[in-house]
Length: 387
Image (tube, rainbow, N blue to C red; front, side, top):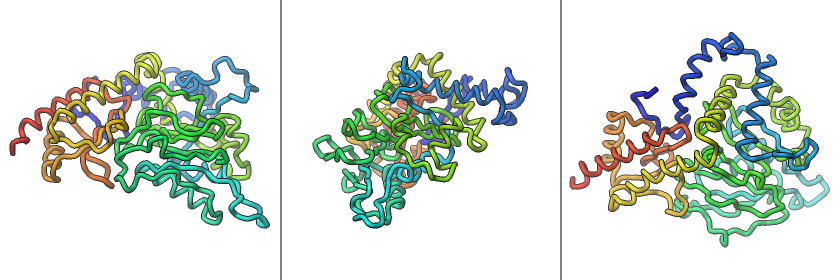
């Protein structure tokens, strides 16, 4: 299956061709059920089994819970929630930050450390601060790259982690600026929370070093509508249990993400993508190698262009997922987008907040698609450089 258009959108991203073929059939009839995936009850035994299978697929890919008993403190829970990563921006501090008693100095309230490394971590900390409006000092900004235009990530010697923090939060990949963390940050012993929305399951990670991971599916895992949460059981036990049911991690875990009507179709797509990742790709190590090769193809063109293409991110912090770059003026960028569309490349416009150009190379983007885009970039430069 080869479509005429190649999708480099920042999201929703491309899905694997083989998954799309299976979905065509499933919209008409899921083979083992005899019903359209759009009409299968979320209370059916089939869907309950699907959720459990998909939970295990994620744990297996991450290497979690292998050989551990159900009573182990290392147990992880997997949730499929709605509201996108944006809902987690508020749900996290709501669950884990405890306010001080009325008779106690507000500074004794618990607090969290945040890194602000780009557009999405700005969003995350803003919502966390809204939860903490009445409690001075509950949200601590460890580092903010705004003065540098979010063109780099902090060096470890620029960060002063607090061992008393309730949790430490950062974004692993900033899609807008094309920045990606290539090391795990934080202090051991302080719960590590990471928004991995745009690079979750794109490469191997030491998942056991994280206490809470969240990622909306529409980049590497499936369509918009479902967000994956992976949470250590110890973290769950620290969450408040008096929040409304939909916003209560305890309730969602007990219901296996079936507290209210979940996005059945989106979860089914995630299941198919995970199966493709396991069986067709060969796991996270193989996926990481493919993604690195895709990114290298584009960065090599940028690096060899003698400044015709200008990358946004510092070289050491460049993202495998989102290659962000500019040309020397807006008119030439508009021409690039026009000719790219004519050549069958879509989704290359930069984020609305920054402009410029961006090629997103999520799991579903084939290596040959990235190579074709690299060739187009080379030819575009040859055509326009002397003008």
